[in-house]
Image 1 (cartoon, rainbow, N blue to C red):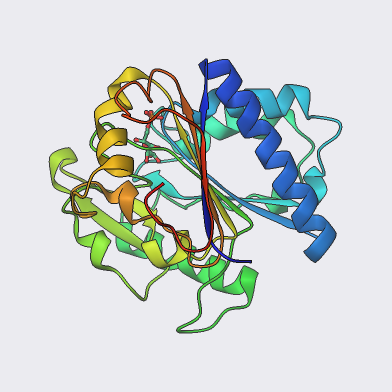
Image 2 (image 1 turned 90 degrees about the vertical axis):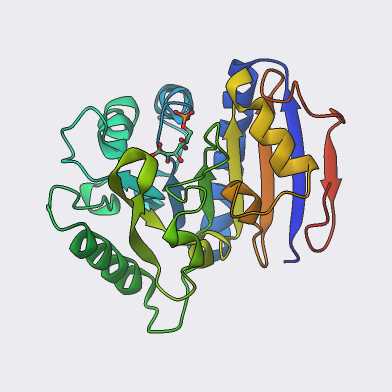
Length: 261
Ligand code: 6PG
């Protein structure tokens, strides 16, 4: 598969979440047809909660949950019961409502106070699941990502040391402005995906989205700009509010490589 970029601007958040649910279902069907299983990385924060609710209600009976394996793109360094936990949000919005086997869900053990150990343990979990050794990068079928108003994605924040990581799969990334460590997949893993789908909603994201999609700013300042699947699809699912500062608001599709669409 060559790499490609698609930008879809949806009128409302609800239409964005419906489009995202369709994309998840499409990716699942394709993955299971080709490889017998579907590996998906969930994003955190608040945006995906509506998608998770939609999948748990509308796709509950039609989705191949027993062949689906859940991972996280990042996690806060808190226990899974903490209100800030990305795992807790997904558990409440979706996982507790669908017949997915417990063994198909791989969360960060973020209750461990040693963040570096949490990252290392998750990396070993990925290496074991995908049967990849040192120097090899696993290819997830679908990685969902969000974008912060500062252009961060997963827990790769502007100017953070994690942006330079080229060999590890998972790191504890110190985020100065949060004065906290965050657990996150690294750019090599995110860019090894067969498909990456950004879900971006709301006017607060509009300036960063313009910078990421339409300017030449350095990726280190807007890390979402560094997401370019090497051999996969990149899909931007954006609502009109988030797209409000894009100079060109027509839907776009680009072919091989990831020229600026
Ligand atoms: C997190 C996320 C993060 C998120 C963006 C957008 O742990 O917070 O993984 O990268 O996707 O910050 O968050 P919202 O959807 O809440 O705007």
